[in-house]
Length: 329
Image (cartoon, rainbow, N blue to C red; front, side, top):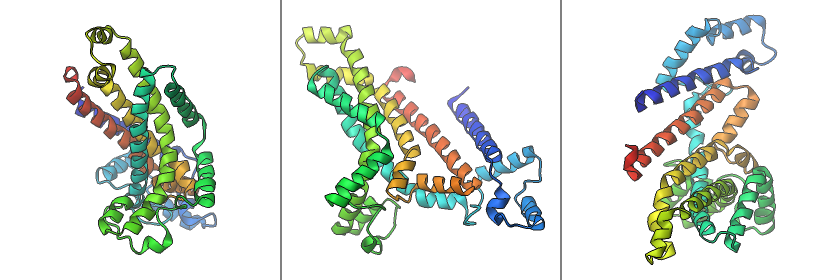
């Protein structure tokens, strides 16, 4: 099966899965709209209006047609299209996860390489400790401790939210990414305030990515350093770091890209707790509120988007594989 066919089958399976999730969740969409005090007549009218009286296969057909038009239905709470609401909140999560990924990868990859080269040295021990903390410490606990120490006690960073109230009217949304919008405005005070708000949640979110990326990079690097071509290159007099960056790192680049892509997808998906602690108006917080409120259209739309993100990142990885390693073409 071609790559395009595989993607289409994956998306169709994903659509079927999200449709079944919407039907199997123990939530009544009619009551989510009308409330618990709805009369039987009003309940029946809404039941028909939502199309729930039709056979499942017919409902699934309508569902696929709506998805083809990027129509996830209307939010059962606000009455607005789910696609519009996701488009409104998603840039906040994308910005947070991207900054976290830059921090996690920018520190994690070099740290993993240096730890592998200096195996059992102090840098290696430091990398292991950071990995242990990143894996074991809950993000919500780190977030609360970070707010107490760096915001409430030291005042080094901004508090909850994306920007202080006094700057909200200075910010003209253009892209939805506050760092970019603030930079475009030329207001340095605004840019500093936005940066002060994002640096702490992004750093805490980045810790888990750093732990995973550095640990996997270290493992890949150690495996390559034990290969014969490295020993031969050293015997010919090549410097260790030249061998590492010009030969060894090139051989593990594809594996590192896979790790980074997976980490990015998990950051986008797993920012829920961090957004809740920092009152970050993003995708994860929106999905949590929708789930708690029984807004199934929003929950299914968010679930579908997460699946599409994973598929898209896999496609990007495949493209990079072909560029970096011609043998995979």
